[in-house]
Image 1 (cartoon, rainbow, N blue to C red):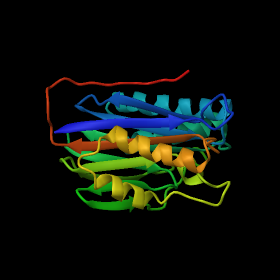
Image 2: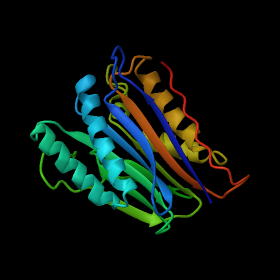
Image 3: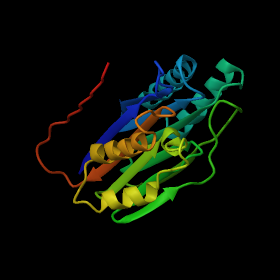
Length: 233
């Protein structure tokens, strides 16, 4: 098998800081996790909050703490640091090679999407942001790790896209069409969703936007692990 992880993100128009932070960490018993946090509001304050949460989560995951426990600890830490006055949304997507499972951990009112082969469903169980209350628990979905899995998660900039003109993205329709393509890459999926959102915002995003995608495919090619990052400055 081959696990692909892709991230596409852009900051709010005319903002010097993105409140979204995304990091990837290797799991100590094999596999990878991608952590995405959207700090409340935007700008420097939101960035500081999202960095605080991401650093806490990836440190715990790197120490072997389970995803759900890491999410709860990060929530309690944000609550303590900010006195329950600042919230953040949190998504963790993990390919765990020890348990041979894919885990989706959500503290985000916005849904994530899970595709198994040609079956696409929204993971839209009620979920609360972290930081406002003690012991805020995430919603966790776990499936066996096998070729044909795709998970997509995003911050609320995707949901707000088009709000100036009363338009919105039909995310289910877009993903269904993209997944009908012959083996689209994770990066292609992330890029198209981001491009569609920016287009609805007429090239001026009304909010920070981040999209993360994890795909599990049948392995083709060599055994080399690769990661590419593009950072416009």
